[in-house]
Length: 108
Image (cartoon, rainbow, N blue to C red; front, side):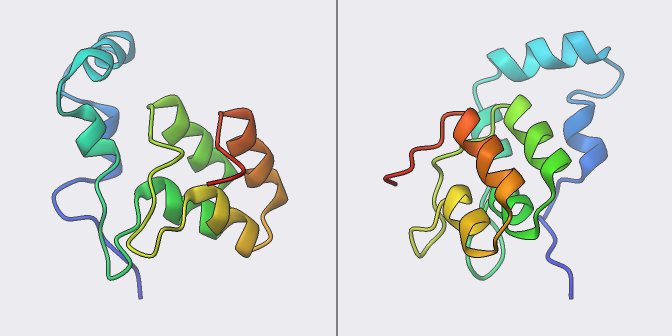
């Protein structure tokens, strides 16, 4: 059973807004007032972010991509678990290293 995030898909957030070059899209994301809310949107029963799901599944390339898009490495789910906690809990050492390199707080 897959978990879906309502209203957004990978294609939506790689081309925000549609038709822009990657450099222009990155500038839009950097200055867009609601981009942090979009990239850190919580969904599912546990109210996890995309980054938390990727970390718990051990998807290193996805974690890197989301971090490059400024996903919050400290955004916790409804139980207070951060992406770093999820990666540690599920034993994904490569993801743990990446999150620590991206500034995740080991004390969170």
